Image 1 (cartoon, each protein chain N blue to C red):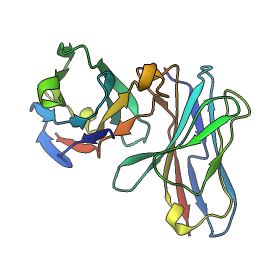
Image 2: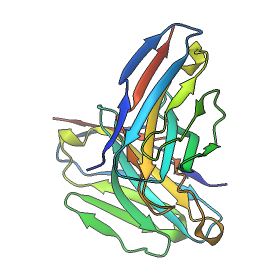
Image 3: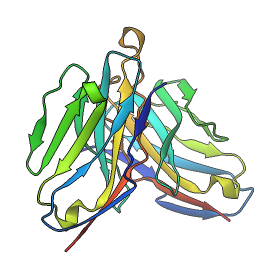
Amino acid sequence: EADIYQTPRYLVIGTGKKITLECSQTMGHDKMYWYQQDPGMELHLIHYSYGVNSTEKGDLSSESTVSRIRTEHFPLTLESARPSHTSQYLCASSERGAYSPLHFGNGTRLTVT
Amino acid sequence: AQKVTQAQTEISVVEKEDVTLDCVYETRDTTYYLFWYKQPPSGELVFLIRRNSFDEQNEISGRYSWNFQKSTSSFNFTITASQVVDSAVYFCALSEAGAGGTSYGKLTFGQGTILTVHP
């Protein structure tokens, strides 16, 4: 059973606000990921990290930023939310490299009005 | 670049029917990994199975079975005697090992298939 937690579960916020989506895992995994899921279901990698103090941008360009100060914590921040940021954001972690399955959190459904 | 295609956007079946979800992939790597995930209405993606590129053995787990064929670059998923609880979105995904096996485990997902099982 994976132990990865995302908060908040749902967030409705006005345009221009700064928001931080939280993601924590208790498994000691080095690798963590943020995926953005469209209403049309497709999942796109927007950020990943392979350890403390390392972050990389994913395949889909995003205005969000991430940080990895502690192994267990991988928050995502939007400095100024816009309606185009409305989406579901899924955090995941994995133990090793390409062959390790990802363990996902429940996601944060963000709506920007 | 790697790519995963799930041509079936939605499938609707009646309980106890068998259903197969198709997945076709593209990759230039000789070493890669294929996955299936289930996303129930709660939103969390649940890992179902992993296959590596050197293992073409089909696998059966209860009502689930997977057919991996490198010759056609396909990794299809069959649910036998479907149940209402199988209703979910199913994703096929690919991870490349990369040069020297240095991949960071980035998954490329297919578009997903919505499966609805009616009572």
